[in-house]
Amino acid sequence: MHDTFLLVLVVLIALGFDFTNGFHDTANAVAPSIATRALSPRAAVILASVFNFIGAFLSLKVAATVASGIVSQTDIILPVVFGGLVGAIAWNITTWYFGIPSSSSHALIGGVAGAMLAHAGTSAVLWKGIVGKVLVPSLFAPIFALVIAAIATTLSRRLTLKSDDETKSWGMRAGQIGSSTLLSLAHGTNDAQKTMGIITLALVANGTILQDAATPTWVIVVCGAAIALGTFLGGWRIIRTMGQGFTTISPTQGFAAQITSSAVILSSSHFGIPLSTTYVATGSIVGSGVGTKKRQVRWSLAGRVALAWLITLPIAGLCGAASFYVERACGYKVGVLVMGLALMSYASFVFLRSRSDKIDAGNVNDKWGEHHEAFEGVDATGGQ
Amino acid sequence: MLTTSTAPKPLIDWVSIGKVLYISTASAVLLVVLFTITVYCLSTLRNRHTTVSNRVLLSAVALTSSTGILAVIISGLYYIINK
Image 1: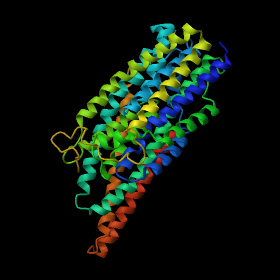
Image 2 (image 1 turned 120 degrees about the horizontal axis):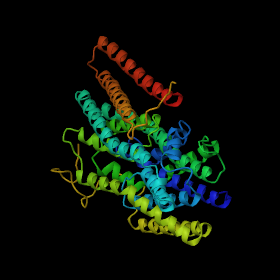
Image 3 (image 1 turned 135 degrees about the horizontal axis):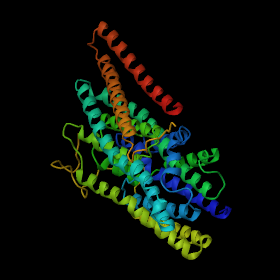
Image 4 (image 1 turned 135 degrees about the vertical axis):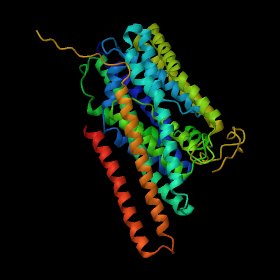
C-alpha cells in the first residue's frame, strides 16, 4: 500500500506525539533540580532539551523493539499507526492537564495495539512482546527505582551526617546539574527512539523501506528535534507534581533520585527494553522520600498516580481503536483528516482550560498547597 | 543425521531484567556514594581546624572519588554506545 499523502500525515502526527512526549516528560529529568533550585526552571528545560536531542543519537535498540515487537509488521497499515498516535496524544494531553506523570510510552504502545486490534483482530497484536517487553518491565521499573533510590539516599544521608549543611547543599546541587544532564541524555536515548520506531513502522507499512530495515538517519534527526522542542517548552504542571507533590526534595534526595533514574533508564535502553522513563523517575523520587529520616512521602498521591498508570494502556488502546473505526467509516484519507482536526480541537480546548489554573516557570516551585494532602502524620508543608 | 534446534525465547526475559537490576543498582549506589565522599571531603577541607596531613589525605580521597565518578560515567556510556 503506497500512499504518500497518508505517510506524510502519519509522520507529522508521529512528530506531534514526540513533541508531547518531550513536553510531558520534561519533569522526569528536571523536576528534582528545579525543586531544590539547583537550576532555574528555564535553565533546567534548556539543558534538558539539548541533552534529549543528543541522546536521540546514542542507541537504536528500543526503536527496533517498538518497530517490530508490538504489532505484526505484515498486517500494519498507515491508518492504524495514525489511529494509535491519536489515542496516545489524547491521553498525554489529558494527563498533562491533570498534572499526572503517566507513561507516554505506554500510551503509544496501547494506542497502536488498540488500533491494530480494531483493524486485524487479536492475532495481529504481538501479545508476547507487549507482556514481556512492556508490561513486566513496567511493573518492575518503578519498584527497582524506588528501592535503589531509597538505598542511595540513605547511604548519602548517613555519610554526610557530620558535613556542614552549606557545603553539603552546595555540593549536592552542583551534582544535580550533572545528574540532570545525564538523565536528560538517558531520556533522549530511550524515548526519542519510540517515535523513531513508530515512523519506521509507518515507512514499512507504506512499502517505503523493507521490513527489518535500519531506521533512516532523517528519522533520527527529526525525532531528536521534536522531543527537544517539547522538552524546551516544559510541562510545568507535571514538573510541579513531581518536584513538590510526592515528597519535599532536598539536594541529597534529588541527586540520588536523578542518578538512580539515569542508571535504570540507560541500562534498560542497552538491553532494548522500552521502559517508561516516567515510572522510573517517579519511583526514584518516591524512593528518595523513603530514604529520608522521616520517610516523608504522600502515598495517597502516589496511589492515584499508580491508578492512572494502570489505566493508561487500556484507555489509550480504546482511543486508538475508536480513532481507527472513525477513519475506516469516513474512508481512510478523509478519516485521518477528521481525526487530526478532532485531536487539534481537543488539544486547543484543554490548553485554553489550563489557562484558568496556569502553572509556569514562575509558580512551579510554590509549596504543595493546603488544599492538597499532607504527608501522613506530618503538616501540609512537610519539611526535611 | 544431526539436527539443531533452538529453544523458544521465554515470554519474560528474566536475564535482561536481572542485568538491568544488577547494573543499575551497582552503578547508581557507587556513583552516589563516591560523590557523597567527595562532598564530605570538600566539606571537611573547608574547616579551618583540619590539620595539614588530614588536608593532604582528604584531597587525595576527593581526587580519587572524582576520578572514580568520571570513570563510571564514561565507561558506562562507552559500553552503551559501542556494545
